[in-house]
Image (tube, rainbow, N blue to C red; front, side, top):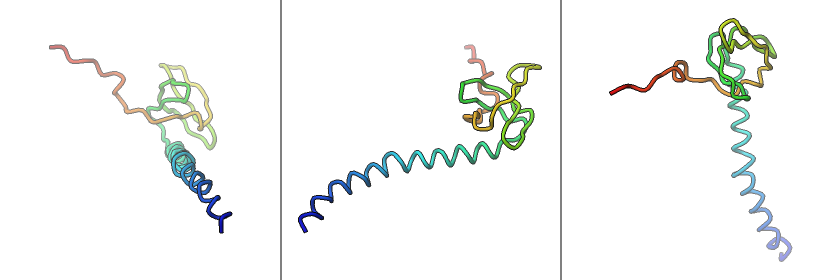
Length: 96
């Protein structure tokens, strides 16, 4: 019985580690994979490198992103970090 009692703190630490670190990271990875599979032509995206662009073509494992007028790059689908809110980066502050 004393052996089991001495293992309880280790089990507690392992469970805490699971709930605070591993589980949230797994959830983020699933959400990112779902977003990357749902991409469609015309989406405003941000690459993991911080480059913003517009999807011009999607294929199985890569996409073509237009980063400037007439400049299209081919990147791995996994390089898409997020879908940007279209138009927000072009908003100018209101003048009083």
